[in-house]
Image (cartoon, rainbow, N blue to C red; front, side, top):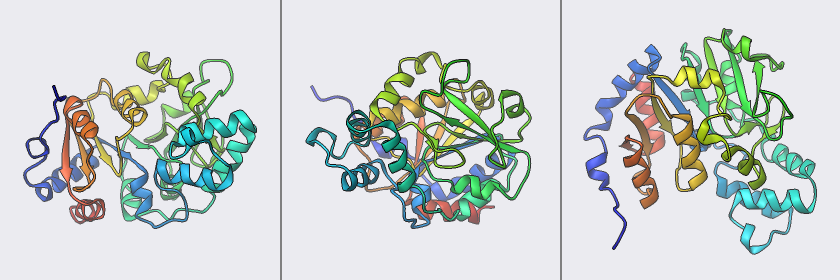
Length: 289
């Protein structure tokens, strides 16, 4: 018997354009948490990898990869770490994401609002750059093997890039949360299989999710922008970060690139698809401001 596959027509909004105004109101009021994927950075046409597949291909241009690791960024990073050194992985990630990414109008719009939390699930620094012109914000980044103690899963940074702490995070009007790390300000990267095995052993009990993130997601909806959920790891992170928040969320979906697993994920997590090309959706959100 075939596994159940939801009908996208029954899940999606009937009139996406009509939703943009309401979504912007909820962004302005702080009732929606924007969750940015690499597709948002891609709108700037940057000189960095803008998908897990592209990052795996970048690794393949630097190191000869076994067949099992080709096309799988986490396995590729693990192969490099195991056969060379963790420092090689960090150096390659730094090289891949060294080119600056120009913030898009969406980055700048979000930065102009006192949004309690923005989740950015890629490694570039565009959202940090957009926020740099204002005060009252800081960042939490996922970090691999950060050491012992209560902060071993993540690090705190203020708007200037200096390391901060959990008490400072409580005072930030806007919290930028980068669960996989980022190239700036300190080259923190969750990328190899070993990194994720370490985190995923405890993510069900939420230990790797910062307490301040858990606090700020409470009773709020999520709006997933520029994200793909065609991999189990990506689905797991989105599920665990949005756990114990509001009951219904939204996801902007490219009309021609929805997998069966993604449809099942949308249904199971009560994600309402807004089926519009990403550039058109972002333009619609900005126009609704």
